[in-house]
Length: 239
Image (tube, rainbow, N blue to C red):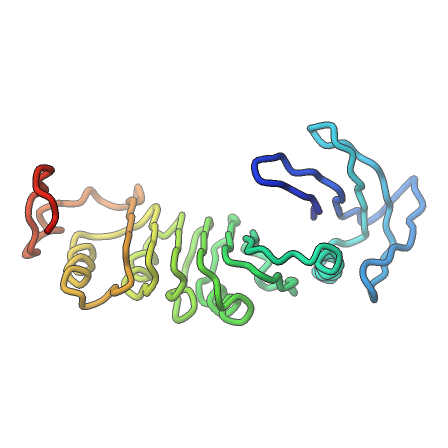
């Protein structure tokens, strides 16, 4: 289902139009609708209530595919001429579809139950969203990022698994969160050593790694082995 709504900061969404699939409409005669300048489709129009008792228009079409979505997006863009930076949410299965390209996008959330191939995502973002500042991936991942993904300023990987530390080893951004990561003491030791000696990660400001249940308990002494560290003293201010 696709929605068109308006939301002011801190106020619930004011829903206006919803599109839904209804392959075999019954009981109501479909009408021809025009979306934008060039696209026409048969659909059934009804009035519905949201959970907040707001009236909105529900339009049922035979198939809510990429062509309908693209035409709908172009039509809304012409009406509202949105110019603010925004974020979009993409399902992992949608990367292979003909998605509409949105303007002024600075943040993308990719989520879904299916495994996301980082190579496919890299190609998609490099082609359509080269100026992204924040990427949130809330799905299992595999593959290896090669270019665009590694340059994004802020990256969150909710299911980083064994790919997370490989991603981190090539990351050129500023902030990264790796959740459910599978790592070893040697991997962390190598990462910290390079970061401390400025042999890599020159742009990195913050990293957070939370271990997966698949990871063994880590030995702190092995992680800091041969690293130049000193015990934190809260009374001593950095020079």
